[in-house]
Image (cartoon, rainbow, N blue to C red; front, side, top):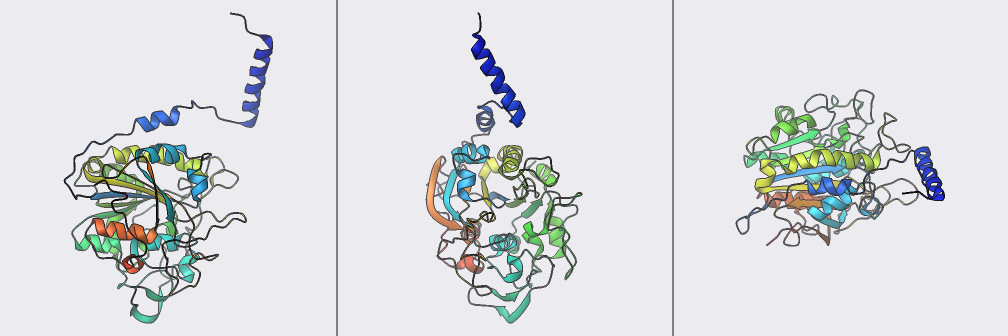
Length: 385
């Protein structure tokens, strides 16, 4: 067959353009293949039963439209995983910047001026009033909360259930600075992209040093823990490093100047970790995977500091979102054999809702602002009857 010379020249020109721009050409069906490879658990649960092995992956600094819009650079999340699970289209963060959101997810404590600024100094929480207020809030400011501020980790232990935090690039278990010293792990370093501010489990005296060192571990340990149902925690709190969580993307690259950052890094991380979780025995028995972000994007002029769910203001700051009442719209994906798949859930939720929902799953009382009914919790709109 003879080729038209004009078509040949056009093809050569197109390939030259692609090479010049550094565009990577990949098969359009690559993500579909990765998606199809995920297991589809067919489990017949007893009426009224709910997940008892929950995996949470927390990512960084992306607004809903960027993550889940039609031009998303994370198609594995925005297309594949939303098809496998349920997309919460109106899920919101509760503040800015990072740490106050992580703190809220596990304790229901609201932002204070120090956690809003990510606690560059690892100082004690300074109480201005003893005890907790009527909403379970510690009054004051600081980073490391006093022992009477509980977390979901404490609640699970009291019920003889297991928890574990998995932190990528953490060099030793329960890694944090000494009290009242500068935190050297605020930004990516040449030897580590771990960030203390993304590891909320080290900010509570209610979690003993012994428990923290036993259960706040490097992400590498997740694979072996997934080996059996018995070794898999009831709650796994998974945090990628500053590249893989999408946090670092200066000029499109991570801190090493080579690895693609932002949503592209998130896409690669999820393609590696999600199949391992979903293929585990615990997940297939009664698991649930939740993927969300800490806060919406604050770059440029379009700062998203919106709130939902009648988010309370105070007692320690009058602007939880620094630039507004909340942390902006971020979205979340929930995948489980207990969950109705492939639909968009438009009900409003935030990080306090997440904590409340987890506590309800495990039969726990509600901490801090998770006790307020306004955030709501996952119900029959999420779980299959």
